[in-house]
Length: 477
Image 1 (cartoon, rainbow, N blue to C red):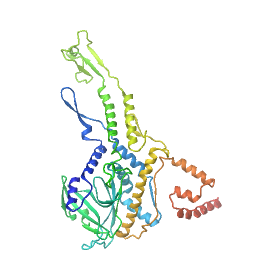
Image 2: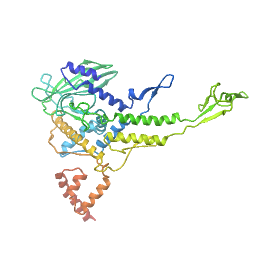
Image 3: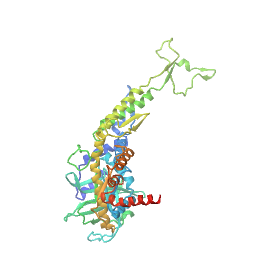
Image 4: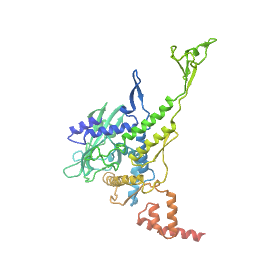
Protein backbone atom coordinates (compact mmCIF):
# COMPACT_ATOMS: atom_id res chain seq x y z
CA UNK A 1 0.00 0.00 0.00
CA UNK A 2 2.87 2.38 0.81
CA UNK A 3 4.20 2.21 -2.73
CA UNK A 4 0.77 3.06 -4.18
CA UNK A 5 0.41 6.06 -1.82
CA UNK A 6 3.72 7.37 -3.18
CA UNK A 7 2.17 7.19 -6.62
CA UNK A 8 -1.03 8.95 -5.56
CA UNK A 9 0.90 11.75 -3.84
CA UNK A 10 3.00 12.16 -6.98
CA UNK A 11 -0.18 12.42 -9.09
CA UNK A 12 -1.37 15.18 -6.76
CA UNK A 13 1.91 17.04 -7.26
CA UNK A 14 3.59 16.21 -3.95
CA UNK A 15 7.08 14.89 -3.28
CA UNK A 16 7.95 13.17 -0.04
CA UNK A 17 10.87 11.26 1.51
CA UNK A 18 12.67 8.60 -0.57
CA UNK A 19 10.94 5.22 -0.84
CA UNK A 20 14.20 3.50 0.15
CA UNK A 21 13.84 4.83 3.69
CA UNK A 22 10.42 3.23 4.03
CA UNK A 23 11.96 -0.13 3.14
CA UNK A 24 14.02 0.20 6.34
CA UNK A 25 10.77 0.62 8.27
CA UNK A 26 9.60 -2.66 6.72
CA UNK A 27 12.75 -4.34 8.05
CA UNK A 28 12.20 -2.87 11.53
CA UNK A 29 8.58 -4.10 11.41
CA UNK A 30 9.75 -7.68 10.74
CA UNK A 31 11.96 -7.56 13.83
CA UNK A 32 9.12 -5.98 15.82
CA UNK A 33 6.93 -8.94 14.81
CA UNK A 34 9.73 -11.37 15.69
CA UNK A 35 9.62 -13.07 12.29
CA UNK A 36 12.27 -12.02 9.76
CA UNK A 37 11.99 -14.18 6.65
CA UNK A 38 15.67 -14.07 5.73
CA UNK A 39 16.80 -14.88 9.27
CA UNK A 40 14.21 -16.93 11.16
CA UNK A 41 13.55 -19.26 8.21
CA UNK A 42 16.61 -20.98 6.81
CA UNK A 43 17.96 -24.27 5.39
CA UNK A 44 20.61 -26.66 6.71
CA UNK A 45 22.42 -29.28 4.58
CA UNK A 46 22.48 -32.64 6.38
CA UNK A 47 24.74 -34.36 3.88
CA UNK A 48 21.88 -35.59 1.71
CA UNK A 49 19.42 -32.71 1.35
CA UNK A 50 18.55 -29.23 2.56
CA UNK A 51 16.27 -29.25 5.58
CA UNK A 52 13.93 -26.36 6.28
CA UNK A 53 14.46 -24.94 9.73
CA UNK A 54 12.78 -22.25 11.81
CA UNK A 55 14.77 -20.25 14.32
CA UNK A 56 13.15 -19.54 17.67
CA UNK A 57 12.75 -15.85 18.50
CA UNK A 58 12.85 -14.08 21.86
CA UNK A 59 10.85 -11.16 20.47
CA UNK A 60 13.28 -8.69 22.02
CA UNK A 61 12.62 -5.89 19.51
CA UNK A 62 9.04 -5.51 20.72
CA UNK A 63 10.13 -5.96 24.33
CA UNK A 64 12.60 -3.07 24.00
CA UNK A 65 9.90 -0.81 22.53
CA UNK A 66 7.42 -1.79 25.24
CA UNK A 67 9.92 -0.96 27.97
CA UNK A 68 10.71 2.46 26.56
CA UNK A 69 7.00 3.24 26.23
CA UNK A 70 6.40 2.17 29.84
CA UNK A 71 9.30 4.30 31.07
CA UNK A 72 8.31 7.45 29.18
CA UNK A 73 4.54 7.48 28.66
CA UNK A 74 2.79 5.61 31.46
CA UNK A 75 -0.25 6.23 33.66
CA UNK A 76 1.81 8.30 36.12
CA UNK A 77 2.63 11.03 33.59
CA UNK A 78 0.63 14.16 34.46
CA UNK A 79 -0.20 16.98 32.05
CA UNK A 80 -1.27 20.01 34.05
CA UNK A 81 -2.75 23.23 32.66
CA UNK A 82 -2.88 26.37 34.79
CA UNK A 83 -6.43 27.34 33.77
CA UNK A 84 -9.39 25.36 35.12
CA UNK A 85 -11.45 25.64 31.92
CA UNK A 86 -8.43 24.71 29.81
CA UNK A 87 -7.66 21.68 31.99
CA UNK A 88 -11.26 20.53 31.88
CA UNK A 89 -11.52 20.78 28.10
CA UNK A 90 -8.16 19.08 27.52
CA UNK A 91 -9.13 16.21 29.86
CA UNK A 92 -12.46 15.80 28.08
CA UNK A 93 -10.82 15.60 24.65
CA UNK A 94 -8.30 13.07 25.98
CA UNK A 95 -11.07 10.93 27.46
CA UNK A 96 -13.13 11.06 24.26
CA UNK A 97 -10.08 9.96 22.26
CA UNK A 98 -8.83 7.24 24.66
CA UNK A 99 -5.58 9.20 25.01
CA UNK A 100 -4.23 7.46 28.13
CA UNK A 101 -4.20 4.09 26.36
CA UNK A 102 -3.32 5.27 22.87
CA UNK A 103 -0.47 7.51 24.05
CA UNK A 104 1.37 4.53 25.52
CA UNK A 105 0.71 2.44 22.42
CA UNK A 106 1.89 5.26 20.18
CA UNK A 107 5.09 5.72 22.19
CA UNK A 108 5.85 2.02 21.69
CA UNK A 109 5.28 2.44 17.96
CA UNK A 110 7.52 5.53 18.02
CA UNK A 111 10.43 3.40 19.16
CA UNK A 112 9.61 0.68 16.61
CA UNK A 113 9.18 2.82 13.48
CA UNK A 114 11.10 5.93 14.48
CA UNK A 115 8.24 8.38 13.90
CA UNK A 116 4.62 8.81 14.98
CA UNK A 117 2.11 11.62 14.75
CA UNK A 118 -1.04 12.83 16.47
CA UNK A 119 -3.27 14.76 14.12
CA UNK A 120 -6.13 16.98 15.23
CA UNK A 121 -9.22 16.50 13.10
CA UNK A 122 -12.46 18.43 13.42
CA UNK A 123 -15.56 16.51 12.30
CA UNK A 124 -19.16 17.53 11.66
CA UNK A 125 -17.96 21.10 11.09
CA UNK A 126 -20.10 23.23 8.74
CA UNK A 127 -17.85 24.52 5.96
CA UNK A 128 -18.60 26.91 3.11
CA UNK A 129 -18.22 24.79 -0.03
CA UNK A 130 -16.85 27.67 -2.09
CA UNK A 131 -14.42 29.30 0.33
CA UNK A 132 -13.58 26.33 2.58
CA UNK A 133 -14.11 28.54 5.64
CA UNK A 134 -15.64 27.16 8.86
CA UNK A 135 -19.20 28.38 9.51
CA UNK A 136 -20.17 26.47 12.69
CA UNK A 137 -19.16 24.19 15.56
CA UNK A 138 -17.98 20.59 15.36
CA UNK A 139 -16.23 17.84 17.32
CA UNK A 140 -12.48 17.36 17.85
CA UNK A 141 -10.92 13.96 17.15
CA UNK A 142 -7.31 12.83 17.44
CA UNK A 143 -5.83 10.53 14.81
CA UNK A 144 -2.89 8.42 15.99
CA UNK A 145 -0.60 7.69 13.05
CA UNK A 146 2.62 5.68 12.87
CA UNK A 147 5.13 4.72 10.22
CA UNK A 148 4.95 3.97 7.36
CA UNK A 149 1.79 6.10 7.12
CA UNK A 150 3.53 9.47 7.61
CA UNK A 151 4.74 11.31 4.50
CA UNK A 152 6.53 14.64 5.13
CA UNK A 153 6.12 17.06 2.23
CA UNK A 154 8.32 19.92 3.45
CA UNK A 155 10.52 20.46 6.46
CA UNK A 156 13.05 22.86 7.93
CA UNK A 157 15.78 22.11 10.48
CA UNK A 158 14.24 18.71 11.11
CA UNK A 159 10.75 20.11 11.79
CA UNK A 160 7.99 18.88 9.48
CA UNK A 161 6.09 21.86 8.04
CA UNK A 162 3.71 20.14 5.59
CA UNK A 163 2.71 16.50 5.78
CA UNK A 164 0.38 13.81 4.45
CA UNK A 165 -1.10 11.16 6.74
CA UNK A 166 -2.71 7.88 5.72
CA UNK A 167 -5.04 5.84 7.91
CA UNK A 168 -6.89 2.63 7.11
CA UNK A 169 -10.66 2.35 7.32
CA UNK A 170 -12.85 -0.76 7.04
CA UNK A 171 -16.47 -0.32 5.98
CA UNK A 172 -18.25 -3.65 5.87
CA UNK A 173 -16.22 -5.88 3.58
CA UNK A 174 -14.53 -2.95 1.84
CA UNK A 175 -11.19 -1.44 2.81
CA UNK A 176 -10.32 2.21 2.35
CA UNK A 177 -7.36 4.52 2.92
CA UNK A 178 -8.08 8.02 4.17
CA UNK A 179 -5.38 10.56 3.29
CA UNK A 180 -5.32 14.03 4.77
CA UNK A 181 -2.77 16.57 3.55
CA UNK A 182 -1.76 19.55 5.66
CA UNK A 183 -0.21 22.17 3.40
CA UNK A 184 0.50 25.90 3.52
CA UNK A 185 -1.26 28.16 1.05
CA UNK A 186 -0.07 31.45 -0.45
CA UNK A 187 -1.20 33.29 2.70
CA UNK A 188 1.04 30.99 4.79
CA UNK A 189 -1.98 29.51 6.56
CA UNK A 190 -2.85 25.82 6.57
CA UNK A 191 -5.30 24.12 4.25
CA UNK A 192 -6.32 20.53 4.93
CA UNK A 193 -7.12 18.45 1.87
CA UNK A 194 -9.00 15.17 2.36
CA UNK A 195 -8.94 12.20 0.01
CA UNK A 196 -10.47 8.73 0.19
CA UNK A 197 -9.12 5.73 -1.73
CA UNK A 198 -10.59 2.27 -2.02
CA UNK A 199 -8.00 -0.41 -1.30
CA UNK A 200 -8.16 -3.27 -3.81
CA UNK A 201 -5.44 -5.62 -2.49
CA UNK A 202 -2.92 -2.79 -2.27
CA UNK A 203 -4.06 -0.95 -5.39
CA UNK A 204 -5.71 2.39 -4.52
CA UNK A 205 -8.60 3.93 -6.44
CA UNK A 206 -9.83 7.44 -5.57
CA UNK A 207 -13.51 7.54 -4.52
CA UNK A 208 -15.76 10.34 -3.18
CA UNK A 209 -15.61 10.99 0.56
CA UNK A 210 -19.33 10.29 0.69
CA UNK A 211 -18.63 6.64 -0.20
CA UNK A 212 -18.13 5.95 3.52
CA UNK A 213 -20.61 7.16 6.13
CA UNK A 214 -17.87 8.35 8.51
CA UNK A 215 -16.63 10.81 5.86
CA UNK A 216 -19.94 12.11 4.48
CA UNK A 217 -19.58 15.33 6.49
CA UNK A 218 -15.87 15.77 5.74
CA UNK A 219 -15.10 18.56 3.27
CA UNK A 220 -12.62 17.92 0.48
CA UNK A 221 -10.74 21.05 1.52
CA UNK A 222 -10.78 23.07 4.73
CA UNK A 223 -9.10 26.48 5.05
CA UNK A 224 -8.08 26.70 8.68
CA UNK A 225 -6.67 30.26 8.66
CA UNK A 226 -4.13 28.85 11.12
CA UNK A 227 -0.44 29.68 10.83
CA UNK A 228 0.48 26.89 13.27
CA UNK A 229 0.32 23.22 12.33
CA UNK A 230 -2.48 20.98 13.64
CA UNK A 231 -0.32 17.91 14.06
CA UNK A 232 2.66 16.90 16.18
CA UNK A 233 5.51 14.64 15.16
CA UNK A 234 7.18 12.45 17.77
CA UNK A 235 10.45 10.55 17.43
CA UNK A 236 13.12 9.04 19.69
CA UNK A 237 15.91 11.49 20.48
CA UNK A 238 18.34 9.52 18.31
CA UNK A 239 20.22 10.75 15.24
CA UNK A 240 18.88 9.29 12.00
CA UNK A 241 22.09 7.80 10.62
CA UNK A 242 20.20 6.10 7.78
CA UNK A 243 19.62 9.52 6.18
CA UNK A 244 20.37 12.51 8.45
CA UNK A 245 18.77 14.91 5.96
CA UNK A 246 15.28 13.52 6.59
CA UNK A 247 12.91 14.77 9.33
CA UNK A 248 11.98 11.19 10.23
CA UNK A 249 13.42 9.25 13.17
CA UNK A 250 14.80 5.73 13.30
CA UNK A 251 13.90 2.69 15.35
CA UNK A 252 15.55 2.42 18.75
CA UNK A 253 17.02 -0.90 17.59
CA UNK A 254 17.93 0.27 14.07
CA UNK A 255 21.63 -0.05 14.95
CA UNK A 256 21.18 -3.16 17.09
CA UNK A 257 20.05 -5.68 14.45
CA UNK A 258 23.23 -7.81 14.92
CA UNK A 259 22.50 -7.92 18.67
CA UNK A 260 18.90 -8.99 18.02
CA UNK A 261 20.26 -11.77 15.81
CA UNK A 262 22.74 -12.79 18.49
CA UNK A 263 20.02 -13.01 21.14
CA UNK A 264 17.80 -15.15 18.89
CA UNK A 265 20.68 -17.43 17.87
CA UNK A 266 21.59 -17.98 21.52
CA UNK A 267 17.96 -18.66 22.44
CA UNK A 268 17.46 -20.99 19.47
CA UNK A 269 20.57 -22.92 20.50
CA UNK A 270 19.22 -23.15 24.05
CA UNK A 271 15.87 -24.60 22.89
CA UNK A 272 17.52 -27.00 20.47
CA UNK A 273 19.78 -28.22 23.27
CA UNK A 274 16.71 -29.86 24.80
CA UNK A 275 15.44 -31.13 21.44
CA UNK A 276 18.77 -32.67 20.42
CA UNK A 277 19.64 -33.77 23.93
CA UNK A 278 16.53 -35.86 24.35
CA UNK A 279 17.27 -39.34 25.74
CA UNK A 280 17.30 -42.20 23.22
CA UNK A 281 17.64 -46.00 23.55
CA UNK A 282 19.43 -47.74 20.67
CA UNK A 283 17.98 -51.23 20.15
CA UNK A 284 19.39 -54.00 17.94
CA UNK A 285 16.96 -55.64 15.55
CA UNK A 286 17.00 -58.93 17.47
CA UNK A 287 15.61 -57.19 20.53
CA UNK A 288 12.50 -56.12 18.64
CA UNK A 289 11.31 -59.68 18.06
CA UNK A 290 8.00 -60.64 19.56
CA UNK A 291 7.66 -62.90 22.58
CA UNK A 292 4.52 -65.02 22.76
CA UNK A 293 3.01 -62.93 19.99
CA UNK A 294 3.58 -59.62 21.81
CA UNK A 295 6.38 -57.13 20.98
CA UNK A 296 9.10 -56.80 23.59
CA UNK A 297 9.19 -53.00 23.11
CA UNK A 298 6.34 -50.63 22.26
CA UNK A 299 6.85 -49.89 18.53
CA UNK A 300 5.19 -46.46 18.96
CA UNK A 301 7.51 -45.30 21.76
CA UNK A 302 9.73 -42.49 20.44
CA UNK A 303 12.46 -43.24 23.00
CA UNK A 304 13.57 -46.39 21.15
CA UNK A 305 15.57 -46.32 17.93
CA UNK A 306 15.99 -49.57 15.99
CA UNK A 307 19.42 -50.23 14.52
CA UNK A 308 19.53 -51.70 10.99
CA UNK A 309 19.87 -55.48 10.55
CA UNK A 310 23.33 -55.16 9.02
CA UNK A 311 24.62 -52.96 11.81
CA UNK A 312 28.41 -52.94 11.94
CA UNK A 313 28.27 -53.66 15.64
CA UNK A 314 29.75 -57.05 16.36
CA UNK A 315 28.03 -59.95 18.01
CA UNK A 316 29.44 -58.87 21.33
CA UNK A 317 27.68 -55.48 21.13
CA UNK A 318 25.09 -54.69 23.74
CA UNK A 319 21.57 -55.59 22.68
CA UNK A 320 20.09 -52.41 24.24
CA UNK A 321 22.25 -49.25 24.55
CA UNK A 322 20.91 -46.08 26.21
CA UNK A 323 22.13 -42.81 24.69
CA UNK A 324 22.04 -40.04 27.29
CA UNK A 325 23.13 -36.57 26.14
CA UNK A 326 24.24 -34.14 28.83
CA UNK A 327 22.69 -30.65 28.61
CA UNK A 328 24.77 -27.46 28.61
CA UNK A 329 22.04 -25.30 30.10
CA UNK A 330 24.31 -23.36 32.44
CA UNK A 331 26.70 -22.31 29.67
CA UNK A 332 23.84 -21.43 27.30
CA UNK A 333 22.08 -19.43 30.01
CA UNK A 334 25.23 -17.41 30.39
CA UNK A 335 25.49 -16.95 26.63
CA UNK A 336 21.92 -15.65 26.37
CA UNK A 337 22.57 -13.23 29.24
CA UNK A 338 25.69 -11.92 27.48
CA UNK A 339 23.69 -11.28 24.33
CA UNK A 340 20.95 -9.49 26.28
CA UNK A 341 23.51 -7.30 28.02
CA UNK A 342 24.95 -6.12 24.71
CA UNK A 343 21.46 -5.57 23.26
CA UNK A 344 20.41 -3.62 26.35
CA UNK A 345 23.42 -1.33 26.02
CA UNK A 346 22.85 -0.74 22.30
CA UNK A 347 19.23 0.25 22.93
CA UNK A 348 20.09 2.81 25.62
CA UNK A 349 19.26 0.90 28.80
CA UNK A 350 22.83 0.24 29.87
CA UNK A 351 24.00 -3.21 30.94
CA UNK A 352 22.02 -5.65 33.07
CA UNK A 353 18.59 -4.24 32.22
CA UNK A 354 17.35 -7.71 31.30
CA UNK A 355 17.62 -10.97 33.23
CA UNK A 356 17.20 -14.39 31.64
CA UNK A 357 15.78 -16.55 34.41
CA UNK A 358 13.70 -19.69 34.26
CA UNK A 359 13.35 -19.62 30.51
CA UNK A 360 11.90 -16.10 30.35
CA UNK A 361 13.18 -12.54 30.03
CA UNK A 362 12.50 -10.28 33.01
CA UNK A 363 13.20 -6.57 33.35
CA UNK A 364 15.56 -5.69 36.16
CA UNK A 365 13.82 -3.77 38.95
CA UNK A 366 16.16 -1.48 40.79
CA UNK A 367 16.48 2.19 41.54
CA UNK A 368 18.44 3.86 38.76
CA UNK A 369 21.17 6.26 39.79
CA UNK A 370 21.30 9.72 38.23
CA UNK A 371 24.67 9.08 36.61
CA UNK A 372 23.61 5.85 34.93
CA UNK A 373 23.28 5.35 31.19
CA UNK A 374 19.59 4.66 31.52
CA UNK A 375 18.87 7.85 33.49
CA UNK A 376 20.66 10.01 30.96
CA UNK A 377 18.87 8.32 28.06
CA UNK A 378 15.44 8.75 29.72
CA UNK A 379 16.08 12.46 30.21
CA UNK A 380 17.29 12.74 26.63
CA UNK A 381 14.09 11.21 25.24
CA UNK A 382 11.95 13.33 27.57
CA UNK A 383 13.27 16.51 25.91
CA UNK A 384 11.50 15.60 22.65
CA UNK A 385 8.43 14.07 24.32
CA UNK A 386 7.81 17.10 26.56
CA UNK A 387 7.92 19.41 23.55
CA UNK A 388 5.50 17.14 21.66
CA UNK A 389 2.99 17.00 24.53
CA UNK A 390 3.02 20.76 25.10
CA UNK A 391 2.47 21.43 21.41
CA UNK A 392 -0.38 18.89 21.37
CA UNK A 393 -2.09 20.67 24.28
CA UNK A 394 -1.93 24.00 22.46
CA UNK A 395 -3.27 22.41 19.25
CA UNK A 396 -6.25 21.00 21.17
CA UNK A 397 -6.97 24.35 22.81
CA UNK A 398 -6.59 26.25 19.54
CA UNK A 399 -8.82 23.84 17.59
CA UNK A 400 -11.34 23.90 20.42
CA UNK A 401 -11.65 27.65 19.93
CA UNK A 402 -11.82 27.47 16.13
CA UNK A 403 -14.06 24.45 15.58
CA UNK A 404 -15.84 23.65 18.84
CA UNK A 405 -17.07 27.00 20.12
CA UNK A 406 -14.66 27.22 23.06
CA UNK A 407 -13.10 30.34 24.53
CA UNK A 408 -9.79 29.04 25.87
CA UNK A 409 -6.45 30.65 26.65
CA UNK A 410 -3.99 29.07 24.23
CA UNK A 411 -1.04 30.65 26.08
CA UNK A 412 -1.88 28.88 29.33
CA UNK A 413 1.00 27.57 31.47
CA UNK A 414 1.62 23.85 30.82
CA UNK A 415 3.68 21.49 32.97
CA UNK A 416 4.57 17.88 32.21
CA UNK A 417 5.36 15.69 35.22
CA UNK A 418 7.10 12.52 34.02
CA UNK A 419 7.21 9.41 36.17
CA UNK A 420 10.66 9.24 37.78
CA UNK A 421 9.88 6.51 40.31
CA UNK A 422 12.46 4.28 38.64
CA UNK A 423 15.08 6.89 39.44
CA UNK A 424 14.18 7.35 43.07
CA UNK A 425 11.60 5.56 45.18
CA UNK A 426 8.63 7.95 45.48
CA UNK A 427 7.66 6.96 49.00
CA UNK A 428 11.20 7.51 50.28
CA UNK A 429 11.37 10.89 48.55
CA UNK A 430 8.00 11.93 50.01
CA UNK A 431 9.05 11.03 53.54
CA UNK A 432 12.27 12.97 53.12
CA UNK A 433 10.46 16.08 51.83
CA UNK A 434 7.92 15.80 54.68
CA UNK A 435 10.77 15.85 57.19
CA UNK A 436 12.32 18.87 55.46
CA UNK A 437 8.91 20.61 55.61
CA UNK A 438 8.65 19.91 59.36
CA UNK A 439 12.14 21.33 59.93
CA UNK A 440 11.31 24.47 57.98
CA UNK A 441 13.86 23.73 55.27
CA UNK A 442 11.11 23.39 52.67
CA UNK A 443 8.26 25.90 52.31
CA UNK A 444 4.67 24.67 52.33
CA UNK A 445 3.91 26.03 48.87
CA UNK A 446 7.08 24.37 47.50
CA UNK A 447 5.87 21.07 48.92
CA UNK A 448 2.48 21.49 47.20
CA UNK A 449 4.10 22.54 43.92
CA UNK A 450 6.16 19.36 43.85
CA UNK A 451 3.71 16.77 45.14
CA UNK A 452 0.43 18.19 43.83
CA UNK A 453 1.89 19.42 40.55
CA UNK A 454 0.63 22.97 41.12
CA UNK A 455 2.13 26.22 39.92
CA UNK A 456 3.39 28.68 42.55
CA UNK A 457 0.32 30.92 42.48
CA UNK A 458 -2.14 28.03 42.91
CA UNK A 459 -0.09 26.46 45.68
CA UNK A 460 0.18 29.69 47.66
CA UNK A 461 -3.53 30.42 47.22
CA UNK A 462 -4.42 27.04 48.70
CA UNK A 463 -2.28 27.46 51.84
CA UNK A 464 -4.59 29.81 53.84
CA UNK A 465 -7.46 27.37 53.26
CA UNK A 466 -5.33 24.53 54.59
CA UNK A 467 -4.27 26.54 57.62
CA UNK A 468 -7.88 27.49 58.37
CA UNK A 469 -8.93 23.83 58.11
CA UNK A 470 -6.25 22.79 60.60
CA UNK A 471 -7.29 25.66 62.91
CA UNK A 472 -10.98 24.63 62.81
CA UNK A 473 -10.13 21.00 63.53
CA UNK A 474 -7.97 22.07 66.52
CA UNK A 475 -10.78 24.19 68.02
CA UNK A 476 -13.29 21.35 67.55
CA UNK A 477 -10.97 18.98 69.39
